[in-house]
Amino acid sequence: MRWLDSLEVRLGRFAIPHLTRIVVVLSLLVWGLIQVNPRFLEALVLWPAAVREGEVWRLVSFLFIPPGAGFLTLFYLLFLWTMGEGLEEAWGSFKVNVFYLVGMIGTVVAAWLFDGVGTAAYLNLSLSFAFATLYPDYPVLLFVIQVRVKWLALISAGLQVVAFALGNWSTRAMIVISLANYFLFFWSHWRRVASDRAYAARRRREFERAQGGALGAKPPEEANAASHTCHVCGRTGITNPELEFRVSSVDDEEYCLEHLPKRPARA
Image (tube, rainbow, N blue to C red; front, top):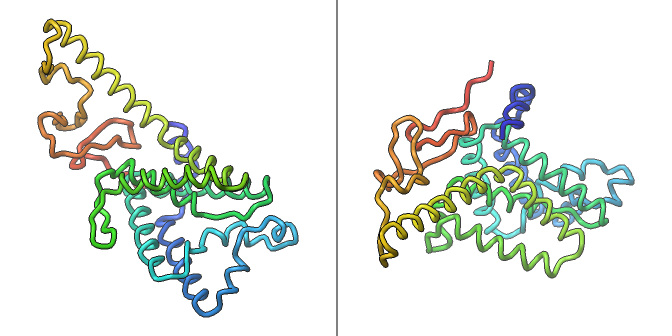
């Protein structure tokens, strides 16, 4: 996303580091206040009618409303903290800020257009999709079962489909905008994945035709040019299947985690 890199050069100094930490801490504070007085929640909800009457803080305060008042919410907030830290390590503060800001503005617009109640739930779900895309095999302890985060993301996507089918137009708009925000940031990633898979499938068909269509034939390693390859050390997903690879937001090259470049320090 070169446009975002160019924007970071101009505006990166204004980025808020560890933004999700701030969101989690304030959400935890709100959770505590709700335990004392449940009606406190009413002052934070994004109601367009109330905003029009001058309660402008609701344009931001809805971000800090926890998804529930029970103790399971604490585990949710801990996971939100983890996701934010992981995204910031991969992207840097500026990109995380932009992702959250675009999602927040989209949620406000959706609530305003359809005069519905705004919620940060779908924004945070899109955050989980981003985390699952970058760290698909990250283990999450779900009660007594350890689950990879990519499966939780798929379950969340299914729940969004149900919410879209059963919800009002405001809910549908917030879901669409949160997903649009995700694809704005990951369109190039999925386009690269689709291109690599199509190339690998085409090479396999060419190999099998060259082998006379023999069943079970496998192409040699050099035919699988779509394998992940580290830009520094040259190791691939074939020669070292235990490695994980990432595409750097610094130069759009692919690296193993050992050689993934860090974000350049700002002056």
